[in-house]
Image (cartoon, rainbow, N blue to C red):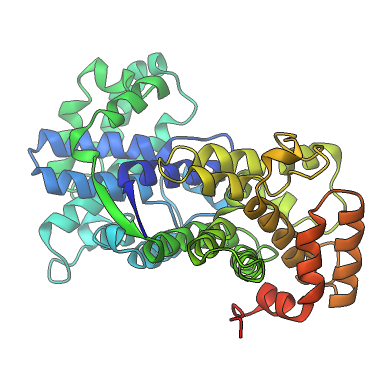
Length: 411
């Protein structure tokens, strides 16, 4: 089975997920793509190079999962030790072929122009990385400013960037930025409603690809690694939920393709947690009402991100409904039980199994007997599907192994 997926939609979905990390600072990747793209257009870069620049720009901060790190990157012009997230982003993008071509650009997007090594990369790749660096640093000055304020401050912004010509930034890119910034329309387009329209209409940003389920799984794994890297206590959670979801699908005798998609849904289910501040995910005590409210929106965010990718409608529901309940009181949609498919119920149970089997800031990991007790209590209260809980009960050791280790193959 293969799916035809619009890579522009996938890229924007991943960009939306990365936006959640900033909590209140959104569209950073989009603004960088626009600013760098306008400079490239002024310099008459070929279509292919501009397309790669677009992808790299939108995804350049995929190595950032921490709200604290994200805030620091956009609060300071001179960032101390930025290479860690560049290397992590490079590693993630290298794992997925449609993005691997731009992984090297992302790797060097904080490298000063004067420190580039022409022997290690092509001139095109060096310029693309530096264009992102320039646009990324321009966005430091855009933070929290209206379009009108930017029009008043643009001379100062251009002058500051110009002071680093030949050191941080390539002179040709600085000159291009100086030229495109003369137009009022350049700054006005940075407003969200105009920015999305500009990027959606950019012909060089569009491409489609037919992805096999295996490729889709590798893409989902990139998403899950970004989420799980956010906290030591969520590390490996998504992969554990994916393994348990697939195992339960196999135990329920669901078709192989459905089991593969269940595994992918498990990888994607917690994407919305990128919006939850680090301090809440790592809090060692019970959450207060405000913190619970922040946590409770994460499945809604997962739904909003995935629903933008055409062709993944069923999978989106399986991933996003993992906190809905069979009594209709779950969140965030309070869906009636007839709206919850068996795969969605499986992911919900798998999420609880893995969470109970893993140590959290507020408790130790639970042993299998205690995990079963909690699951049965939730099934009796009609929070989880009783039939799926029975599958876990009959195969508890295999489920615990899948939750914390390798995927278990059926005999």
